[in-house]
Amino acid sequence: MQFNFIANAPQTSTSGQTLAVLDPSDGQIYDQIQRSQAADVDEAVAAARQCFNTVWGKFSAAERGRLLMRLSARISDSVDELTAIEQRDCGKPTKQARADALALARYFEFYAGACDKLHGDTIPYLEGYSVLTWREPHGVTGHIIPWNYPMQIFGRSVGGALAAGNACVVKPAEDACLSLLRVAQLAAEVGFPAGAINIVTGYGHEVGDALARHPGIDHISFTGSPSVGTLIQQVAAQRHCPVTLELGGKSPQIVFADADLDAAVPAILNAIVQNAGQTCSAGSRLLVAQAIYEPLLARLGQAFEQLRVGPASMDLDLGPLIRQSQQQRVWDFLSDAQVANIPMVAQGRVVDEAPQAGFYQAPTLLRDVPPQHRLAQEEVFGPVLCAMAFDDEDHAVALANATRFGLVAGVWTRDGARQFRMARRIRSGQVFINNYGAGGGVELPFGGVKSSGYGREKGFEALHGFTTLKTVAIRHG
Ligand code: NAP
Ligand code: MG
Image 1 (cartoon, helix red, strand yellow):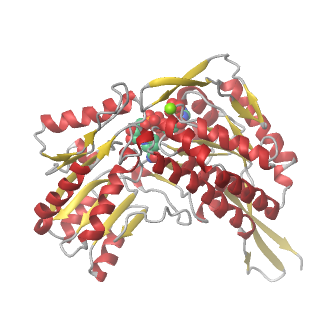
Image 2 (cartoon, helix red, strand yellow; image 1 turned 90 degrees about the vertical axis):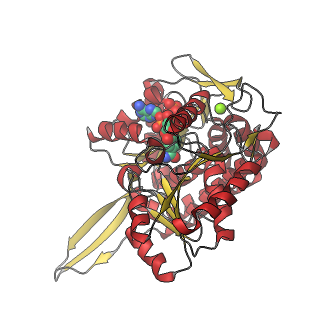
Image 3 (cartoon, helix red, strand yellow; image 1 turned 30 degrees about the horizontal axis):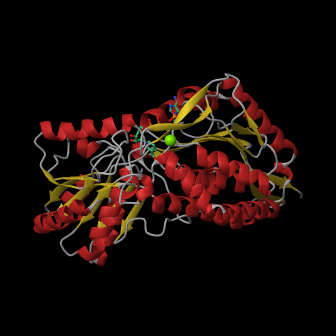
């Protein structure tokens, strides 16, 4: 049985109800989490406020940094344990669960070092005046975390908020709570004061909604679907609470005829296969210059056929999807493809050892996807890559920008001038040239434009979002 974590103590929900925790690899229930309600959110927000007002808000930036560094070290020591937890809860192959745990340690390391580097300005002004700016924490921040990368998104969101001096209330997705509940315990063990990190589990429409509405929440960081992002924005607007939204994408991989295909092919493959395609920055549209369309599809098709899907513990290329409804969502997209006669180039294979009750989906490469079809427009959030050909650079830009999203774009070309032109012309938060998110990018600001959201997390830039700027003007004559 798992409990909420409020003021450094395990707490049962006031509802007395629990929710089942499933292993996506075999579809079986193996644990329970608390099904919390608004009253539990009240308690967590009160604990965070008390901590902010009396303890956490009085820590110096250097002291905060030392504590974040201690947590980073403790996470590093616990990588095997966290990997095992995540693998079972989310169905991630071992290497992917491990990469998430390592990234979490790295986020806390990065933000530990950033705490005492966040400073304001002095501004030349009228004779007899001195003007300065302070970056102050919002106070109590709310964090609504999705199920696809719980540890990584906790790291970038809660790590940044704590570094800036906020106390945090976290609502993980009900499908992916266990690793974060463990990390909160580790934080208490290394000395985080009671109330600095609080975790309340349950449904989005119950706990998430209560958190977004709570008058004691001073800033909301949300990562998830565009539709829930809209709800959060509407609710927060009632009290003019600032929000950061990261709402996914339909990110293009744009391959010109002069590209280094030996570098591009493995990166294109990884960008749609990683975490079984359940990645906000998945490279889910493949735009290819007409001249190399056939040879590139042939090469990628062979690579797709080699891919193997199976239980997380087998550590294959892909694990299962998170839950049955996500599997159904992917099936619906693929049956739409059949109805529209969209040709399939190749599929990987689900291994025989995969239990029938697990949520498996073979990775699928589709070609000649009409740019207006929903497969080319909407987030599948599964291992489905949609290829289409372009005639020239203008056509490539038009296709790249022709969805409501704008999160990431990958551009593959050896032409230096074209690299810059493409980077300028694509409307997205990130453009990767001849790579696709290599190195994890903890240091790099990340976020979207258009329906991919706004605000930036990751990197030093996140600290600007997790603080508010106060201008102080002093007349001293
Ligand atoms: P979602 O509903 O947007 O879930 C994201 C988070 O919001 C979860 O913690 C969820 O809690 C919570 N939530 C749900 N309804 C809420 C509400 N009314 N008020 C406040 N919080 C609420 O996403 P999903 O249904 O899990 O996935 C659907 C699609 O969203 C995916 O297929 C994908 O396209 C997209 N998605 C994108 C990202 C990303 O990284 N950008 C991540 C996840 C999903 P519960 O899950 O516990 O209900
Ligand atoms: Mg689970």
